[in-house]
Length: 77
Image 1: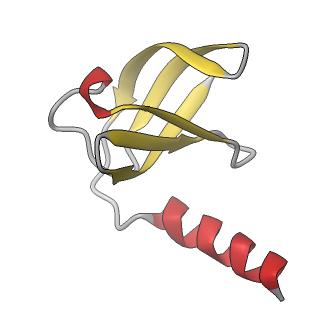
Image 2: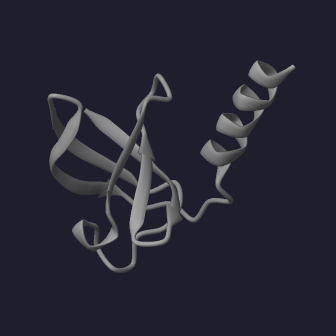
């Protein structure tokens, strides 16, 4: 499954899939130069990331963060 790095929250990396499902993993499991919008191939088992490997690196502005925020804002209306 393809996951996109959305943001870092302390010691955790927050990744999303194409359906905006969120996966949190320890930051140390990603390459040290990982950035928002990098794309990873991951194996998901029982809702958890079992293995992960970067397949593309992008310099982004956190587009997924903006998308998620807009969805949450709509729910609170």
